[in-house]
Image (cartoon, rainbow, N blue to C red):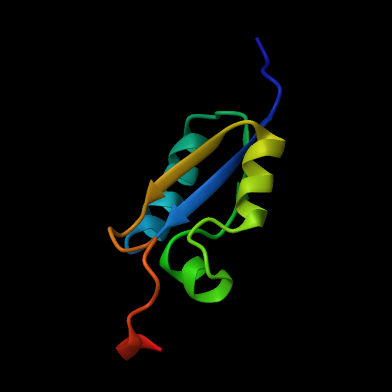
Length: 86
């Protein structure tokens, strides 16, 4: 039985999230899971760049695809940067 490819929003998040995201992609590929990943930014870096930990682009991707795989977000990802990090 063949399954249609499913597009999934992949949100690596922070810290080891990028490494974990890469591993998830490799695991799905090795298992021949028919997934096309759409990577979007979220978390601390998104907060720095966009002023929000979950930018509009990420929300639009989730709505468009109807499914997302969110990995790791630091406990401070929703907090504005501290004055010393600006």
